Length: 363
Image (cartoon, rainbow, N blue to C red):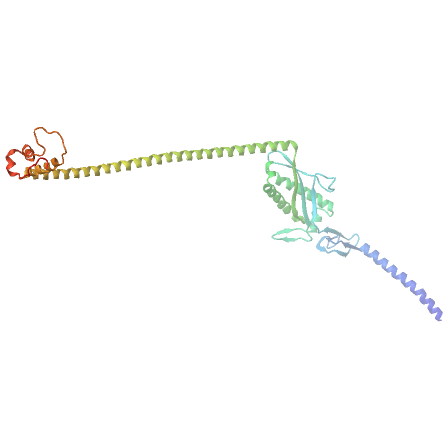
């Protein structure tokens, strides 16, 4: 009996293993048929084919395993990483590119631009700031459920908005970084307004390259040259005007200096003439005072000489003069005979009044 039990136990274990394998296989088949795995970096959107909840459900499914029933429900994956839409002229080097954009300018030229649009897909519908936006349900209903459909739709909208915004620039304004980036920002805001309701968020629009055709380049070069020449002429004109002002100021300064010099010389002459006049006035006053003094002396002398005894005074003065004589020729007069000199000078009638010493032959 023991042997029989052992044989029964040995037959039971393989049967149990086979049963477990069959169960696991059945579960795997059920999971594969009735479940879907949402990949990391994406969110899932469940779609019900029929019944009370028919359509796309608003609630997003996180990455992981989720149930499905074939024919009844389907799960779409919506990526949450940053996506890039390229407009690049080199399609071979950039597969998936939609080619460059041909942007017409306001002055009739065409600019070829390479642009990259960076965007995300909203995980759920909601509000961003004060503006509402859609979610995966709106994206799938309005655009489609595949990456190709999203890219084509976004490329069409971006093409229209970029051309509309950048075509407001002139050919020359494309060279101005500020003017160019301002128009790119306008296009970015317009894209956001159009795409947000369908669940697409535009992160940034990057204008990577812009070129002109050869004939346009030549035209731009000529136009820029004309503008530079015009600017040079304006500067040259301003310089000439400034030079005229400088010359005028210099001439006015020279005239003013000459006038000041002449005025100074005139003041000098005036001061000199006033000084000479003052000197002559003072000299004249001095001469007048001297003449008056001399006149007073002469008057007093005349008064003295007209008084009594003045003739004796004159004779005494002459005596002093005669005493100094050393020699000479005097006719009919003895130079040492003072009495004769007095008689001759003052008359003989006053001789008796003179008390003169007698001449003693030269003694």
